[in-house]
Amino acid sequence: MDLYAMVKNAKAYFTIDVNWHILSWINYGFFGVCFVLLLSIDHVSQDIRGMLPLTDEADEFHWLHHMELMQEYLSLRSVNCLLTWLRLIDYLEHLSPASQQLTGTISESIGDLTVFVFIFLIVMLGFTQAFNLQFGVQIQDYSYITLSFMALFKVMLQSL
Image 1 (cartoon, rainbow, N blue to C red):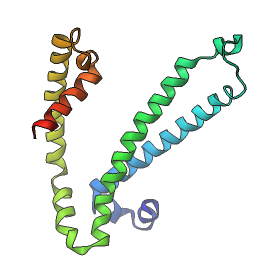
Image 2: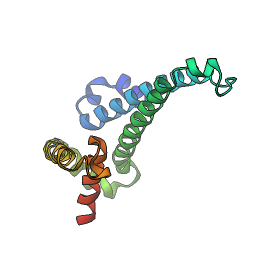
Image 3: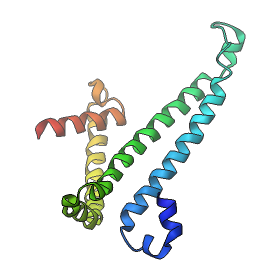
């Protein structure tokens, strides 16, 4: 749909709702990367099918690399899922004309929201590192940077 609209009238495509179109193309890019990564994982997984545990063949297989590819795929897929749900906000306008005010407000404030998220991430990452350094040895929830970030995010949501 976006490709057809872009080819049909490129000038209008790049002047009207530019933020939504950029979000769509980022979403398509993530989808493409996830698809290629999934094909790569599937290709590597073909070697596992006939493998018996505790054999020389199983010992020589690069299990850690395979698991890292799967974890990378899952991370990219989750970001792509979020982008897809955000794109649905744009389609609300086509479903219900009453939601035009909401989608217009979100479209106009995307720059300010981006600055807010960037500043929020700076503050969260600062507290994440501080809590990891201070409590990482004693408390399991703060032992890794990612666990510390998630624990602080959960604490922030519980206080709301």
